[in-house]
Image (tube, rainbow over all chains, first blue to last red; front, side, top):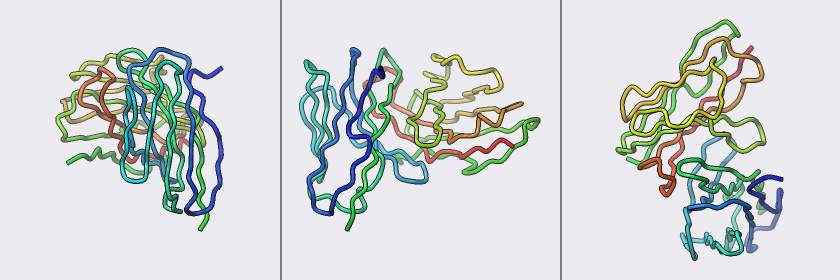
Length: 108
Length: 114
């Protein structure tokens, strides 16, 4: 079993819908990252969380340390949000352990 | 400047070639990372440099040889690679290597080994 599990693996929605991507992990962590990767490769860091909730524009990330669970929400989704979203946890001092990613497609 | 740059963008090399990948950042970050990413898979950590010293080697074959000449620059020297080494190679940096800092990723070098 992977140490970091994301769901769903693939998600297709219509423009404007509210999107939720979930991440569960089974190891002790010091922080959790949400990353976005567009086709072509570049990875952008969206959030780094160690507790609570963060918001940036239409994106919201939450983490529940006791439940070992994090969610990424996108409000008013747009086709430009189409990308792979990756949850990664900080294990030990320096190592990022990645989930398998969620491929999001937003149709106009 | 919050950019990590990587060169080249694309590289095709034969199994007997020697080539190098280059990564540069000017954010004053003291930790730098190499990742390998196969298609439709998440990145896999290869190496971590912290304060210009190699701190993590994830049992990477010796045909991959990292080098950190200074705090802004990270190289990955490639020699006698195999076709299965074809992948996207991503570099990242963070303020320090203690894990509690955001990692900034470069655009990657897409490597094809023929």
